Image 1: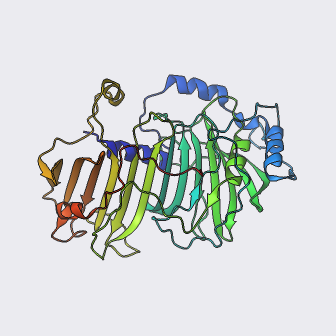
Image 2 (image 1 turned 135 degrees about the vertical axis):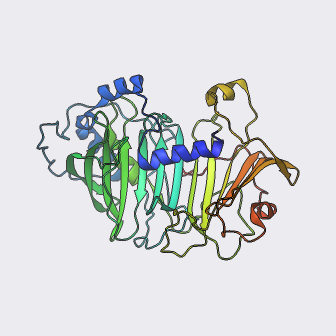
Image 3 (image 1 turned 90 degrees about the vertical axis):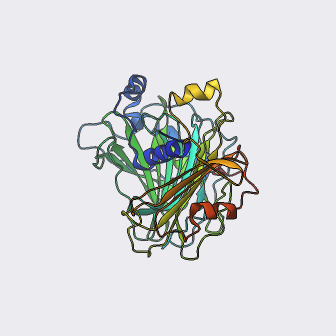
Length: 399
């Protein structure tokens, strides 16, 4: 039984791991991938010319020729200019993170997009400790659940060197197809690297230091034929908006927590299209020490998440394709229908899902020891839901 929050988690996991959620071959996407493979060989000259207009004149260093017989990153033809999805591209941004992040506060929104190309359907942002790594990820994807394609931005803490992406479907790092110097990004030296992520689709990574000993990376996996991915990566990188003080906007505020809990991870995602209804916002708290493995069995953690409450229509029912959004209610909380489950297993304590709370679904998953005797039922009345609304959207693009 898959609910809305599980769907959001799956989409987020797909984005972070760059792995498809299914082994079923998407024939249409395979055809598109076949048409667009070796996309990185197209339009480098035009790409750099466009960037020169955006960020000023640049000197293009010599490109590195590949050694495996694959096409180089050199210019072959001139693609049509990209059309921004959010109006005119903003001027090159001068915001900076003054020093490499030694810790990542999940409640801070460190980066937002200043510009995005057309054709993307969803945006997402996450920060903190996830899957053993601490990092910040901002992304936009095309909404295809069979294989991730889009733009992502990674900020790494001090001293952490970015790794190659995973090969889709297996636990293996993607091989390098080619690498070349890139024009400076925000005044810093930068590098292009192309990775083979699934045999047909390649991914371009643009990498530079946002502060001394702190790496930033923009990844682009094309979602349509003929895309100029280097111009996209450079344009996205130059117009990012950085901050170390802006708070991550959430649809509701988690209050009333025991003092021993601290936030370790937060994520939000939502649609770019006006008619999209799937969005998600969640935050994880931990009572463990900063060096503990928070994902281990029995770790004292609390997950609180919000998503839109959905009244079934024929359109949504067809989109769900037989999936079930919510567990059958078995209790009421403050007059709202809810489902409550408490496990006998000492490693996992309880889950509370409250429906139609100011147009939202509120879910809390608490491992034993994270909360005091009040439990999730006692915590729910303390949440600040005053600003909650069903049509909430994450704020991930500069207005």
